[in-house]
Image 1 (tube, helix red, strand yellow):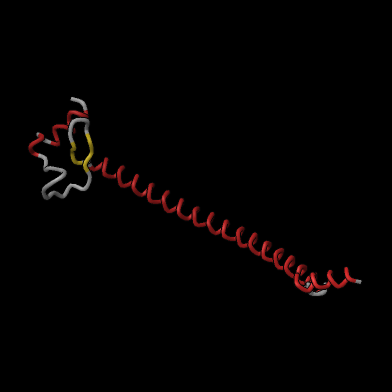
Image 2: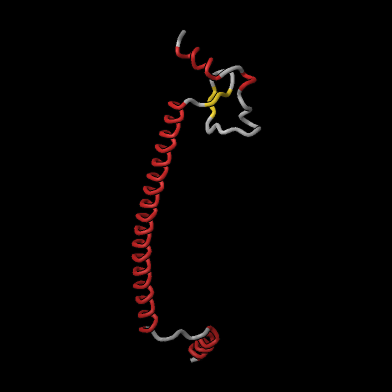
Length: 121
């Protein structure tokens, strides 16, 4: 008798197992044996728990790496923002200095009357 058959015999007949979807039972994990859901053996439970620990550790590692990537991007964008604001501030101050250096513009009505007076002379 092979190991697979011995495992089937230890599970009992299909009617002897509790319903995995309904009812009260103390079975933590169920596995699919190809034809039905059966309770996981102790060795399978240990493998399942090891997989859960591994996946949880990988998820925490990914979250930590993602947080580091976000922090790096945030620092990079802060640097870009500060460069842009410095550049824009320099451009604005240069424009303001040009505006201060030249005389104020006359309004359009004053320019028309000035042209009319120059044409009469």
